Image (cartoon, rainbow, N blue to C red):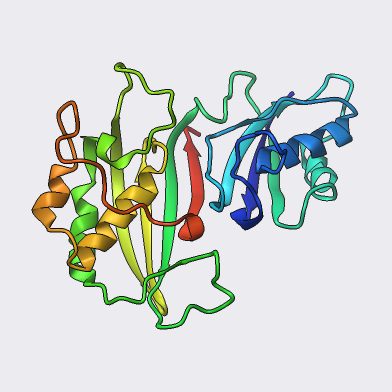
Length: 253
């Protein structure tokens, strides 16, 4: 039985999603809980990586339950949650088709980014929002976000992982980039068919730069669809991980 997990986590305590040396990632903790439940190691595949400090409202992952276990999918939720830190929670577990893949079956992802513009950042927002007390022009902010919509070469808005090749495809399609005013700041919601390493943070940082008058809109546009060699360089500001949340992973129903 192939099972799909929907997972929420507060990323402040973890070194991101992807398993690594040290075993303090979200994937590591869930794999440990799976092994304790099943009495054997179980492979776990997530929909994609989130970096250290990044949060998730609905990350997804899948695993294949061992044949000797007849546990109902619903019962995996409490079985895993009792073995996980309080800052990681399995929200749901459901049976999916044998060919379902948390990463390759996804058709879109939605991220949100929260900014606090209050003069003083509330201690209850520390690590959960980017503190930007300098005045932002909301109209310019919205205009900057719209620069990214559509299909573009986003190499100027992607950090290198070290495994890039000349054949790497830097094209992605952003279907929505929306700005919402909050009582203490703003929320940016990004929807696209995929996002590269630090892409959301680099786009958000550039849009904030524009809204602060620190980069001209024409120069922002030049960072997209650049020829080989990136003559205009990379996005000038990578927003911190604090305000970033993986909100939803979409699949064809």
